[in-house]
Structure formats: structure tokens, C-alpha cells
Image (cartoon, rainbow, N blue to C red; front, top):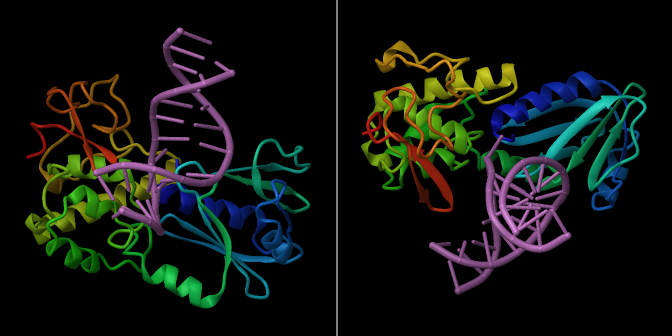
Length: 268
DNA sequence: CAGATATGACAAC
DNA sequence: TTGTCCTATCTGG
């Protein structure tokens, strides 16, 4: 489930399992054989996450960059590692643990200029303490593009994906199609704060839950009335089902290449 | 067992 | 806006 919370969680996990340890790296599938050879035998000094981008910093300066894309997945476990099954792009081993990576959109070693370029094209990440949300607002406020597209644009906000954006817009009472230009500074502040709360909770619990684990901030003026059988999200993939707050049928429509979901009553 | 689907991003038109 | 790529999992026949 690779939105930003997953990546930050993985960074912490990998630091815990392999940080400060020398790793053996391989590419059972073969597609990252050269890169794995360059990492192998080095110490994993630290890990980091920027939006949906995961970094491993190895002794000697090598930086591994992984982007899971839509299908990428990590799995890990205690040694001994099982025989690799399926398309394992990268396998890391320490004496105590193994880690497999399958299906990433990116798995590559970056030199310093490439790393700088990557970080330079990312907007503020709600999960990072150094994030500057004003930068995102500046881009949003001068755009005619729909909020959904703007909030999913990683150069505007980093780490948000379809679920967080869909749910944050529901919680803000704004339709996905609202032009960025119409967003007032206070509304942006509320959305940003909400994304910070939602995504931090996601890092903690390891899944996206915008209903049960996280209450709507009072500043938004609306308390959720959640059916005890209610799901963990308000509107994402709930087309045709009753809104958890007002029971109006949730609507869906293609917004660009992605499905938008909204409650026509709660989101105006 | 084919086909559809998935929390993403990019290039090409 | 459309097509393409990465892989696993779920659906229906």
C-alpha cells in the first residue's frame, strides 16, 4: 500500500533491521545485479524517506533509491532467508535478517547530483519535520487545476496518494474538482494539518484509516457519525454506498487517469 | 487460467 | 488524454 506513510514506515523498519550493519546484496531476478554488487559488503549507514521515495545510504557514499510505484513490495523476516520466489529485484541479507524487494518502479543507485535533482522536484512532505507547506499553497493558489490533481502532484505535496487525497478532501468538505485557485489560506492550513495527522497515524498503525483511528479535527466543524460497521475510509472506493456522515450515495467519476470519489452533500 | 485490477509516474501525442 | 512499465492477487468462467 505504497503512499508516503508506507515508505516512512519502511525507512524505519530497514534502519531497525539493517542500520549499522554490513549487508550482502543480490538481485535474484537479475535486473539489479550490478547495483546489488556495488552495495554488497557495505554498511547500511542510514535510511530516509521523502514522500514516496525511499533511500538507503551506504558507507562509501552509495545511495540506493527505491520507488515502489503501484505494485512494489518489500518483505522481510528473520534469517535464514527462504529461496527467492517470483521476481525478486533486490535481496538484502544480514546475519539476522533478510529483505526482498519485488516490482518496484525504481530501484537504482544515485550519485549526488541525481539525488539533489530528485529531492528538488518534491513538494513538502507532511511526514517530514522540515516541510514548508507555504510552498505548496503558492502553487495551488495560482492554479486552475482540480485540487485532486494538485494534491496528488508530488512536486506540490510529496507522499500523498489517491486515498489520502480523496479522504482529506472529504474531511475538508471540498470536491475533488474544486480549482486550486479557489482554496483560501485557512482551508489550505486545515487540509495540511489534517494530512499531517492522517499520515502520521498511517505510519503508526501501518494502514490508511481515516475514520476509526483519527477523529475529524474540531476546527473542521463536523463530527463524524460513523456506523459501527463503517469502513476505515469515508469515500475512497465506496461508490454507490451511503456516506458515513450523511448517508447520501457516494459518487465516483474519472478525474484524469484516476477515480475520484466524493459525497455530493458533504463536499460542496 | 485468462482477464481485471491495484495506494504511481512517466513519455508521447 | 493515452499508452506503457513494474508484479501479485483477486475475479469469473
